Image (cartoon, rainbow, N blue to C red; front, side, top):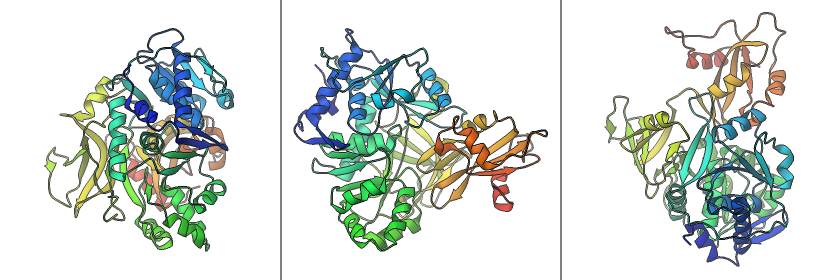
Length: 493
């Protein structure tokens, strides 16, 4: 039987603890047995799922990893679902990827309305076994839904080889080992948690301590106890921790300082926060840059200068170039251009979107849509080419998706969504709305309450401005940059 390298590597660490969660420890042998059982249940007499898409929802930890591995070992494509997904978002993901089966655990069964699809709840005592199929590295492994410049999230398809390349680049660059221990509290429908933490740790034989979310009361005592060698979080979490450490928590600051590596990502890390964290803990946060389609692309070095405001240099196996608006490759420093990337880690396709996939590549180079510049040997991110992308709290949000949801509100005739710069979140969602003439006055809290069943919490607007008309260019298109200035020039909720 041809096993995936991830599975084969786990066999070398069978007796080591893989995951600790909810007061229980699970070794790699437990994960191998459980995922084999799940694969057998999925196959149900078939020889191979042959890339059938299987959606799954589980809390971070053992159940999540076992479901993910079980889908892969049965020959399926794993489609992880956010535990905060709304009914509208769920309908899009399930419909777009043609899901016929959803896997979950008893704790999450009530969260899911499968509609015409089969909902399979994996109980702890479930037992099944069968011969498992050979899994080639070229097979599709996972679809993650990411917001882009369309009103609906696109399915990013990665093969097993893509995921392996993403993991190996980080294991190499950050020197992961079986002796590492890391907390996992990042969302597991997002590449940061799936690859940078879960994937790298399990590839290395390391130990994960899983939490449903970042909970300072649970996690910080473990930090003080030197439970972890690595720590990975988004800037918003580091900003919260700075506030805590600023209150004189010197023992906690010292404990953070003893970790071998602390990483920040998924959103820009303010240079001031980088310096403040070093002042408090002695740690230089390692900032890196990547995206769902590529995994991590650039990283500050493990050994060497970690420069505030910069995202470092290309990771092993990753090629990066900057291209000017006229299509020229830029070789000099201080010349801004679009970041383009090539290598085995880059995704294979957008699910069932061949034209968009083709337009996203040029001779094998993927267009990230991010502007960057090289400064003294380090890359720095300048922002998005598209104003319809908002980066907030580690998430990449589509302004068009949020607009489409808000336009269903009976009091909104027109609206435009933009991102406003924010020291804590990177950007926050702001909406300028033209109200219906006969509608009662619209206020932000009421709009948020109405939208919470249509948008995940991190997509909800944080600012609202009512306007008589939206600014438009000569072609009649809404001028998003002018919309953003409305919030800096005038009052908003």
